[in-house]
Structure formats: C-alpha cells, structure tokens
Amino acid sequence: MNIFRRLFKIGEAETNSAIDKMEDPIKMTEQGIRDMKSDLEKSLEALAQVKALAIRAKNDQEAFQNKVDEYKNKAIIILKKGHAQELEATEADRLAKLALEQKEAAENQLLRAKEETVKFDNNVGQLQKNIQSIKSNIGNWENELKTLKARVKVSNATKNLNKQMAELDSAGTVSMLERMKEKVAQDEALAEAYGDIAEGSKSVNDEIDNAANTSEAKADNELEKLKEQLGMKPTKDN
Image (cartoon, rainbow, N blue to C red; front, top):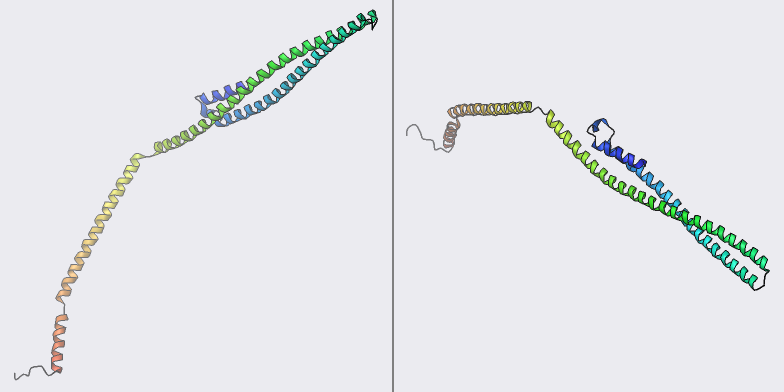
C-alpha cells in the first residue's frame, strides 16, 4: 500500500544524517499524517460498501434457500396429488420435474450467494485489519510528531545558545572588564584627590577667618558705648 511507502519515507527522513539538506521533518510528518487520515477515510468508505455487499449476499443466500425449500415442497405436493389421482400421473411428473429444475437453479444461486458471502466476509475482515493498522499508525505518528516538535524546540534553543557562546569573545570581554575596573579605580582616586583639595582649602580659609575675627573687638566697643550712655564710664580723674 502507498501508506507504507509514505511511512518508510517519513522514517527515513527523520533518521537521515543529512537532515539539514532535506525537507522539514515536521512538515513531512504532518503531511504523512494527513495522507494517512485520507487513506483511513477511503478505507472506511470501502469497508461500508463491502459490508453492504456482504449483507446483500447473506440476504440473497436466505432468499435462495427459501426458494430451494419452496420448490422442493411444491414438487412433493404435485407428486402426492398425482399419486392420489388428483392430477394425471404424466402431468404430475412434468410439473414435479419443472419444480425440481427450479429447485436446482435456486440451489446454484444459493451456492453462489454462499461463496460471495464468504468472499465479502474475508474482505471485510481484511479491511478492518487495515483500518486498525492505519488508526494505530496515525496515533503513533501523532505522538511522534509531538515528541519531534518538542525535540526541535529544545535543539533550536540549545543550538542558539551554543552559537552565542561560540561567538562570544571571552578575551575581549575580560579585557573590557579590566578596563572598566581601571577606570573605576581612577575615578575613585580622582574623587579622593578632589576631596583632599577641598579639605585643604577649607583649613586655610578657617585659619584666615580666625585670624581676622573682629567679632570680639566689636562686642567690646559696643559695651563701652553702652556704659557711656548709662553714665557708667569712669572719668579721667579716677
């Protein structure tokens, strides 16, 4: 069957080492499953048709068996009438002979119906086996497809990660980190130097301010003025 050739093709595509040069295995598997489902539908239609033929053959078999029995009974009845002189003996024999001839024809038709019944029953059994096989294959390949899709996702993620790792310039990265460390250390030293300078400038200004501090002299002058206003300033004679 074509289905088995397709299954072989799908299996071969999945196991071939040169898979990158072939069609997408997932698409191939999906197409294979669609083909199998199409074959399953056709097989179900064929099974229904063959079953209908088998049913008809069985019905024919029953009908022909009834005819055989009917003509046999008619021949017996005719012969009995001839024996009872209800019919002329010659006429009774002629009619009984015709009935037996019809009986023989019905027996031939009955035999053919039996043979067709056996043949159609065998066809039904074979089709049912094929349908079961296709259903089983569809189930297996649908499970395989799920696994294959998961494997593709993992392999793609791993491949991309490994590619990024392979393309990563470790030496350049280390060098960049070292330069960054050096720049940070330099900036920290520079900040400390500016702090020292600022601290030094502050100390000098403090010394100058202390030396030029006139607040105490100004307070003494104000005190003298207040005493003079109150008449408390000592005279020169004293």
